[in-house]
Length: 179
Ligand code: 5GP
Ligand code: MG
Image 1 (cartoon, rainbow, N blue to C red):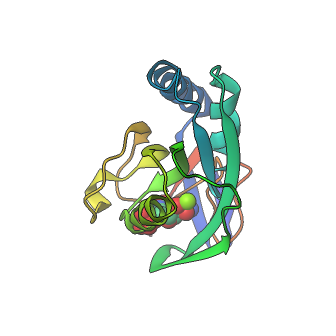
Image 2: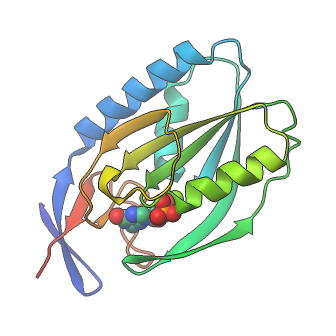
């Protein structure tokens, strides 16, 4: 089905599962090459990145660890600009090569906060892997090392991303239909 309802909004299919899986594989191949001797610690940013992290990690074939942090900044369709840390990091990351695994970089506010926090905790090198990026929305000067897909500045759901809690389970990406 190409149009779905979530709460009060309609969403239409915009990125099918096959395209998603292809782009995730491409990012994984690049990471496997770049970080082969780096013993990376992947940090999956919950909730949104859980599905991307699951598919990505299945394609990673170098020695590595994965852990999780939980942040929250969105309410409904709009970012609040304030990033809350709901579950923090337990690992000692001093001297570690980190790969932050995110669902989407929108304004970049969240990623800037994550980078500052990991730097303060003593990370050696921090790479960013995001499933989606909205280049037109970026407001912060950050380098994103791996981007699976770039998308326009519209609100999307699916593949881990939600609208007020719903839609995370969808295996495709859907874009809000503007009325
Ligand atoms: P930023 O701090 O870069 O503005 O926002 C990052 C966070 O906002 C993402 O990790 C994601 O959780 C959320 N976000 C940004 N754009 C969208 C979107 O189009 N749909 C959904 N569901 N979440 C989004
Ligand atoms: Mg996120």
